[in-house]
Length: 504
Image 1 (cartoon, rainbow, N blue to C red):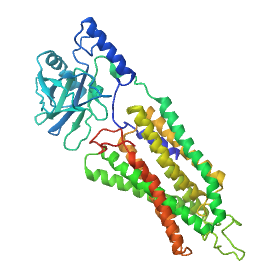
Image 2 (image 1 turned 90 degrees about the vertical axis):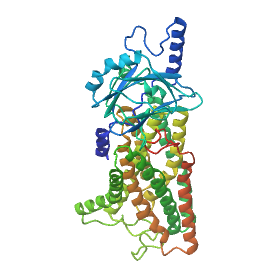
Image 3 (image 1 turned 180 degrees about the vertical axis):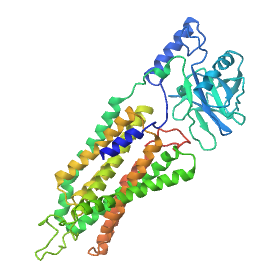
Image 4 (image 1 turned 120 degrees about the horizontal axis):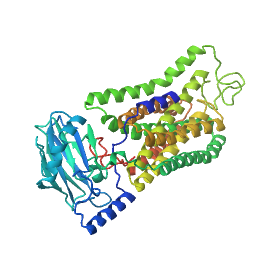
């Protein structure tokens, strides 16, 4: 498990959008004061430091092998940072830092010259000498868009009066029209040195929210233990475990289908251009998750071929004649089988919580506080039934751990949500990598829910009425996870991942 985390840290390279929204919150207020001060002093060129020679705040060069792109400017917290800005487009043969430097002088001359005024929806086109446009944003729209005709440009260098990420609320400023993919610069520069400024990261909020998630789910699980124990005393354990297993199956499978697997499709799509590349990676990770617990059991069985079943004298396993009793109707589990189940639960829960940490950390880093806290609450709501499901399997006849050991395992694996937030704020994790991990965790959950839990609903010892209760428990477990989808949002740009209108 630690090796998986280390591998994750090495492979992480970018997260949920390479945004640099440096002027939100308090920065936006300070910018407004700065602009107001310039107006009072007679400086009519906003966005530049006094005495700075560069006529632009930002420059970037992009590979534009396709024909149609779109430039996007959004209102941030209800208003455009500026009602408009100058933007120069220069076509180049290649996209590189050297190519950007070669056209820098032409870009500066163009942005200081006459610029063509354009409004929302107007197509803009690059030229070899540099074409300057005065973009005018539509105050009645929450975003203004400007299609780009890149038919004759293998690459385009942009020189902008403002840093384009200042105009990002939830969507990247440059996209490919055909797929909605975010287009990132091959090279960029900011004469004011903004690229060297360390963006303040919300460590306190993100880590606090992660700790809150783990504590709330753990405390909720602890308070559920007496109820579970009372149910076991009041009814036939075979029926009780079947009901609990059915509930666990519903919660775990719905978590796999509603959250992990579906979410992974969007994120994996951001890493590769062809649909075939998305499908085989997505499917391979799911199948790996499905088969991994069996591989673990096989390896352990080969290492320890001579093994006794579950501990002798375990209540509910053997009757006076040495046969399996009717109380649980569960076959004795070998050591390797028990390890397989414990591994599946721990690893699946670890990966799920780790990815939840990615989302929570990214939400506080890139989204508003209100959305980040709503994501935190949604995470708690879907984590609690899932942790209860894990506990039921760990303490049931399938594994047979004590209450204390099961609670300890749940708490330790739950700490990975904290690890996920730390990784996100420290090194950045790509959307594609997160998607692969989610698909892998989803495969493990499919194995737990479908292979280990659902068969107990069909126990021949159960009456038809008992089975109806099991089906009801399955539906309840599904609903508890599905409720999180009522306000399922994503603070991720539209189009690129198909997350329009969402936030996890």
